[in-house]
Amino acid sequence: MSSPAGGALGAVQMTQAAIAPGAWLGLLGGGQLGRMFAMAAQSLGFRVAVLDPLESCPASSVSDLQITADYLDAEGLERLAGLCAAVTTEFENVPAQSLRFLGEHGVVSPAADSVAIAQDRIAEKAFIASCGLAVASHVALHEPRDLDGLDAGLFPGILKASRLGYDGKGQARVATLAEARGAFAAMGGVPSVLEKRLSLAYELSVVVARGEDGYALTYPVAENLHREGILAVSTIPSVSASEAISSAARAAALRIAEALEYVGVLCVEFFVLSDGALLVNEIAPRPHNSGHFSIDACVTSQFEQQVRTLTRLPLGSTHQHSCAIMLNLLGDLWFRDGTSSAREPDWRAVLAIDGACLHLYGKTEARLGRKMGHVTVLGERQQDVRAKALAIAHHLGVAPWP
Ligand code: ATP
Ligand code: MG
Figure 1 (spheres, protein in one colour):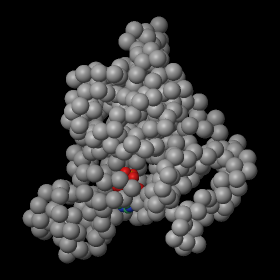
Figure 2 (cartoon, rainbow, N blue to C red):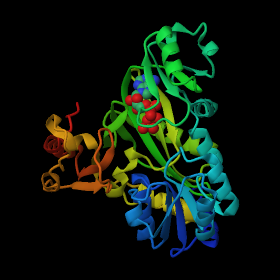
Figure 3 (tube, rainbow, N blue to C red):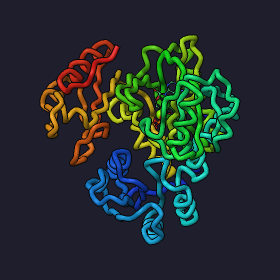
C-alpha cells in the first residue's frame, strides 16, 4: 500500500490517541494569537482555559475559563494541568520551565525544548545553520570583550538581544564598532547577536503544521512588508518570489520543523537578497501574524491546525482558495492626523469593500504600535485584491506600499 508520509498509517495512530472534542484545552497567554486559537478550538467543540496575568486579555472573552496568574505561578499552572487534556502556548517568551512542568502532567505542544531554541537567538541561529540553511552573518555577544577585533564586514549591523525581543523591540541599528559597544552597554550587556544589516530584496515567511506522527504541511508563501520592525502588509502567495524560491522556502521550513521534531504550528521568516539568496531570519514556534490570511483564504486556518496538532487529530488542508493581502491594524490608526485622543477607524468603509474580512482583537485601549486587529482582503486575482487592499489602506490611513 503506498501512501504519502503520515497518510493512512498516521491516521490510524491519530484516532487511537486523539483527544476528543469536549475536552479542555489549555493556553498559556491570552493575546490575539490565543484569542484566535480559542475561537478555533471552540469551533471544533473543545473547551478552552487560558492562563494570562491580565484579566481582560483578548482571549478572556472567548474562552470558557480564565486563570488569572503569572506564567510562573505554580498554583495557576497546576490548575491548568489538572483541568486540561493538552496545553499549548501563544508566544515563545513563555518560560520554558512552565512548559516543562506542564509537559510532566500531560500533553504539551510544542515541546519545551523546541520553544527554548526559538527563545534564544544565539541558539536559534546555530540550530538553523546546523540544518544546512543560511543565516545572516553574525556574532554572538556575551561580554564586551566579544566585540574586540570584530570583522568590519558586519557593519552596518543590527544588535539584537538574544532573548525576549518581538516586533523589533530589543534591537538597535549600529553603524560602527563604537556604536555597537554603546548599544550593547545600553541593553545592559545581555547576551545578544550582532548581525550584518542586509539589503533585502523582500521578505518571506512560511507557516508549517506538523503532527505527532511527523506528517507536516506548509502553507503558501507569504511576502511580508515590515515597517519599523513590525509586520505591516502580507501578500499571499508572494508575488516577488519565483516558483523555485517559494519551493526552497517551503522545503527549508519543513526541514526545520523536522529537525526540531516539532509538534504544532511553526513559522519560519526569511530574507531574500537581490541575488536571490534565501536566508532564514528567525523561527516563531507558534501561529504567526503573517499566517492570519489562512483564517479566511485557506481551507484550514493556522489556528485550527494548532488545535488539530495539539489534540492529535488529522491535519487539515492548507490549500489557499483565494488570493489574499493582509493589513495589520496598529493602534496608530486610532490617532490619525496627529490627534491625541483615540478615534475609532471607519469600519463601515472597510466592510463595504467586497472581500474584506475584518478581525478586531477586542483590545480596549489603542496605543501606538499596538496590534489591534487585521484585515484580510480576498479575491480571485492578486491585482484586484491589491486594488481593494489599497482602497482599505487609504480609508484607514495605512501608508500605501509599492
Ligand atoms: P518579530 O518577532 O515580530 O518577527 P523581531 O523583533 O524578532 O520581530 P526580527 O524578525 O529580527 O525582529 O526583525 C524585524 C524586521 O527587521 C525584519 O523582518 C526585517 O524587516 C528587519 N531586519 C531584521 N534583521 C535584519 C537584517 N539583518 N538586515 C536587514 N533587515 C533586518
Ligand atoms: Mg521577525
